[in-house]
Amino acid sequence: MSKPIIKLYDSTLRDGAQTKGVNFSLDDKFKIYKILSDIGIDYIEGGWPGANPTDDNFFKKISRQSKSKLVAFGMMRKSGKSASNDPGLNAVLNSGVSSVCLVGKTWDFHVKNALKVSYTENLDMISDSISYASKRLDEVMFDAEHFFDGFKHNKKYSMNTLKRALESGARWIVLCDTNGGTLPYELPEIINEVKKIIPKDKLGVHFHNDTDNATNNSLEAARLGVKQIQGTFNGLGERCGNSNLVNVACNLVLKMHFKCNIEKNIKKITSVSRMIDETLNRQSSRNLPFVGSAAFAHKGGLHISAVEKDPRSYEHIDPESVGNERVLVVSNQSGKTNVINKLKKYKIKIKGKEQLILEFLELIKKQEFLGYAYDGAEASFELLARRKFSKFKEFYSLESFKVSDEKRKNSKGELFPFSEARVKIFVGKKEFYSAVEGNGPIHALDKALRHALIKYYPSLKKLNLIDYKVRILTPQDGTKALVRVRIESSNQKFKWSTIGVSYNVIDASYIALHDSITYHLLMT
Image (cartoon, rainbow, N blue to C red; front, side, top):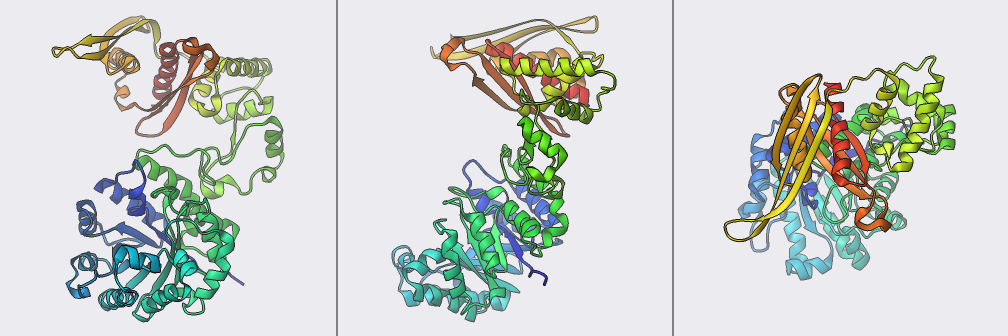
């Protein structure tokens, strides 16, 4: 018997905006809405009309031609106002959508201490608001805030709020674990009790991740008959975030075999996850299940050998089923077969070069002994391979560089830092020289290199440094410690990482910068 259909509801554009360090521009919201719509998310919550100018403009300008249903979020009428005369409620209903999600109190503690109204008045606020909204729009959802806490504290009252919402015309009753404190073993009793008064085809859930159980709870709810699951892509949200719809969707479709609209596009989910992080200028987590760059990465020699014989031994699904890829990490645990696989990926000719392969493997082990870690710097590894196996012609050669950093007093007598870098390079037999100031020594060096090369390689205008990290490898040596610099770069096509190791942080930075520039020029 085929499994029932589960509707996915994404609240990234509202809940995600509460993530520390995330601030959606209007353009960000347009881009993410299109990405989510294209992959087949059933409902996309665009924001809260009337709450801020960005959300107001979003609902005014967003195209209504979409594969997904656009939802506006709002709250019940306020105490002392009728639904028709409440400005906040009407801002939501007048936003041009056909579906709204209205939040209401279900925990008696909040009714008394937050709303400071009687229990009866709260019920009237719910029924008045939903009845009014359901007469004007196609679909009204009741966001039952703190329902699980309310159920545990006063089961009868919390259930009455759901009953009122349903009787007033709510299409969906969404049970919210707003503080993320509910554990999976608690769900069967609660949800089965709710199903006695709410038809399961009208039941949804929304879990926060404060106990790291949001995905587990969402999947358990689906197993118990719930038909709508809410969450955010990449688990964005305040505190510990929301249920991660990436994990939920992949498990529902590939593991539990439920029917979801996203099923036909599940192979795109890795790129969608990363595109959303890229839009928000966030670093994607390498260890995310299903879509992380390390989700199917194998490093140990025994693991790699087993994976090569039968990928199912260490992979619970085929990486390609979610648009990801298997990575056989090059490290000092690597064997000859692993190196050959990497070289084939880069289309480097290795036929008849057995001795070079062995030498290259030994080189990798020596480099990693020195502090290099190529599992996080694929671009540097590829360049190392090309320099070893092919007649790789460098785009430029360094003659010398000098970086100075000092503190000077300004006209007010205040000390401020001053950095300058000078480089001399050769492109072929042509000499180029530049001297450039920067915000710091690395910035100055980066600018000086670009300034010297830009006339010969104008494509460097498209190269961007997006992340820079320094790690001390020998902390026992204090300020004379060995350091590793990792740089992440991008252009208009893709991102890559490079690495440099030295006892001098400027030298390590130059090595990583040199590889970054070289890789960019190689690939453009």
